[in-house]
Image 1 (cartoon, rainbow, N blue to C red):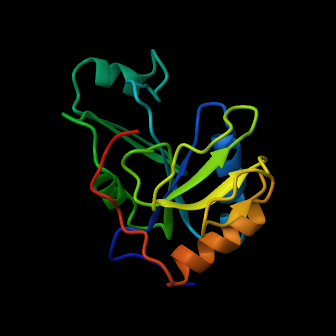
Image 2: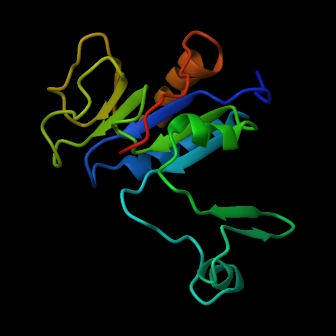
Length: 183
């Protein structure tokens, strides 16, 4: 496999309306890619402030006391929580993921250069990404057939992983990071 260590990995953004199944699909796609030996990084976009630290724990207390960077280290994990003045772009985020083969984002529908959309018929009759950034559609809606875009079923993570490998991991397509930075 082509291991990336010298540059930012390709970025593929999984987008869609809320409650369309993005997280469930991303979980399946990660599992398939990892089982095939790829190193996968992920980024979830939140439009609001968030906390990943547990209130009351030491690192949470350090951050609340004013630390710009709060880190937690253990024998099996390392975490960094850093305050930022403005939202990072996908280019900037990708710099933190140089040791993975691919960075899969969930969200970033406006900032993404490459989108795989999850569109569930019960949630919306049409996709939200209708431009050249849409490279694949994952849907249960048989009426959605965008020109030149492969369509996969909601349970078809294996076939989407084949597509991702072919297009982004083995050299046919370059999903370079974009310059944007919002959802």
